[in-house]
Length: 513
Image 1 (cartoon, rainbow, N blue to C red):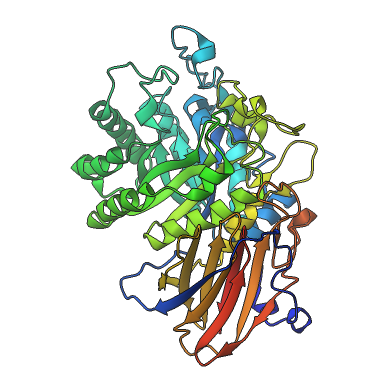
Image 2: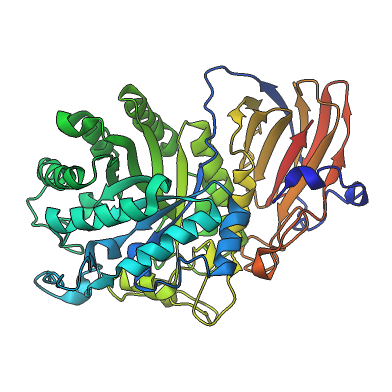
């Protein structure tokens, strides 16, 4: 996507700013937005935007392949500098057939009722040709890789053999390895990967054994961790307590975040999703501070709107697009180095949940998938690759990649809305997410840094629960990932100020030059 080519499209200059607005009789909220430079504000890395998939997806070597042209095109539309993370629950049951003589590991089956266990109950064989194809896919997309290694049901020897082959084939596009997925949940009965008494101290000891073996075979090996589900204290403790001999190899702190869940929880609603989480800021600040103190970065490597596969009617709807764009830019403003939203094929996501499909329990309409309602890119066998609503929110947020965040002071007077701003010469970017279901917002923007002209892209749909018809800049992503801005509105800049109206349940991206 080349935004500059369409920024001042004359044919769209007179477009209505309220096109696609959801009807509302609520009074308009008026607010002043003032932009200021802040030397301490973070830069948004060009590699900020990412996707996360189950490692078991590699059992199909044709998926992450340069020959999967539609998927390549969707990745490139989202970002030309993105980061693909492979991991998830299935990664703890994957094994790499490094040679003809390599045999499958023993499948560890937890005691008790298997139906109460939410981990895979099968092994997934990854062959070398899948890694070969993955290398070509990364080359075709321009993306980089975070590779998750089996920690739950493997050995240091197996992990080092796999890491050696991955490092050799992926080369400089390998960001780092992760050892294990959500180890803070291992001792839980519904996980069962480790005994009930197993804890953080045990994790660090075992992690070090794996990392040492990998480093012996991959001299340049770098690691991220601990890739926890929810225990932010594990992240800061890991940063401080990783063994000294391995500390320089740990380049990133990583963790997961799901806003809602599970899907069959009645309280998991669009309204609560869009209300936001007040704890994100404080917890992220602590993690980012720990990362910076140790010369590392922090990346949210797996997350989405609702854990356990997403909730139909919410995770696959326009509300998720608003949530995704807002969440990504909130983390960017807090100094997070990147966000990887989870998704992939329904079969692997279902396997990762031990065969459970909780989203189907609450589906009110026929569904084409049984899990993965939150997937940014739908890519089911025999069907067209399709950009889902959350993809649009990610596209909007990715416009900030390579920019430095600005201070955006705005009193929205109780409206459920957020504002972010950044500067990337010669442009100033402003993103407004009006998540309020009823109240439109009228912004007077000041401190425009000598801007003389402005353009507006809008992200909108017919309703918050709309699963089709989402647009960005008046255009949908068509088959083969064809997209370009169709409606780029002119915004008058006068006396160092501009006026922007953002309807309820809507988002806008302002580009000032």
